[in-house]
Every structure is written in structure tokens, then in C-alpha cells.
Figure 1 (cartoon, rainbow, N blue to C red):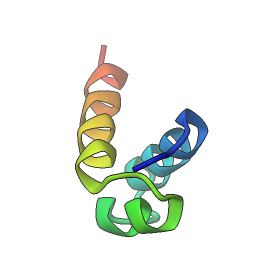
Figure 2 (figure 1 turned 180 degrees about the vertical axis):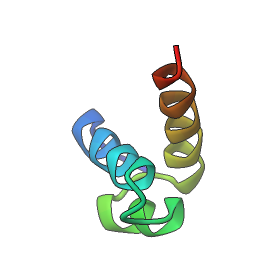
Figure 3 (figure 1 turned 45 degrees about the vertical axis):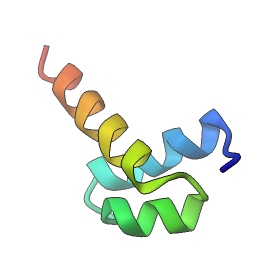
Figure 4 (figure 1 turned 135 degrees about the vertical axis):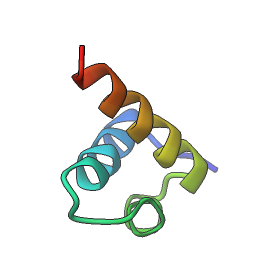
Length: 49
């Protein structure tokens, strides 16, 4: 599946802000669900440091 980094960033922001689930963001931004989920978890983890 082809997607760009900007769409991944938007999907992660939507998930971490609570606007969308990882599944909804994956569909909306055309990014694989597992990629969105893993990136969101990593981004949230790094926010704590």
C-alpha cells in the first residue's frame, strides 16, 4: 500500500488527540492500520519523556 509520511502524521495526530480510532484514521488517510497504531503508540510514548 502506498502512503506518504504526511498522511501518517495526520493519522497519528487524529488518533492521539482522540478524534479517530486507529482503524478510522487508517481508512481516512490511506495508511495501513497496524502502521497507524504502532506509530501512535510510539508517538504517545515519546511525548512522556
